[in-house]
Image (cartoon, rainbow, N blue to C red; front, side, top):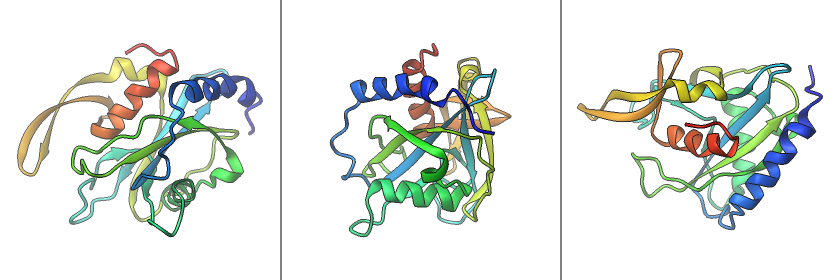
Amino acid sequence: MPNPDLTSNFLQLKDKLASINPSKDRDRVEAVVAILLWKEPGGGLQTLLVQRAEREGDPWSGQIGLPGGRVKQGAESPRTALHREVEEEVGIKLEEVGVELGSLSVGHPMRRLEMRVQPWVYGLSVKPRVSIGSEIAGSFWVNLSELPSKMKMSEITIRDKPWSVESFVVEGKIVWGFTYRVLSELLPILEISL
């Protein structure tokens, strides 16, 4: 069902993002991720998180993240890559249900500091049906206003070593690293206090 509040809910966010991050280096990134925002009528603002499939040699195997992936350098623009990756991973055609609202700061995953990743924010006109692709084990929507209450230090293992990391724990799943930092940047913009 279409959300009648799309314009009023997301126009202010689009203006805020433009004033905060008028990024000029969108074309110099190796990967892109999508923050897909859906406002449940009468409810809170939600975003879609995915759990990566367990794959040998994948540094993000099994982790919780945002839909997205690598840009095919020289073959596509970052925006084209974002649309392709979101459709491949979760079956959502952004050009049909999404409105680009802006971007957040280019960041670097802890496991690949040389990789520049551009997070893009999209407002969704409908809550799309999610159809996960082969790189994804599952997906779930999370209410952004609930994230601050789910913040904690979590113990994880990286290369057989224990680490204590800042995280959100959602449905028993640990959201940490780059995804945690992206969501932590977004929440104050949405006026959700951490």
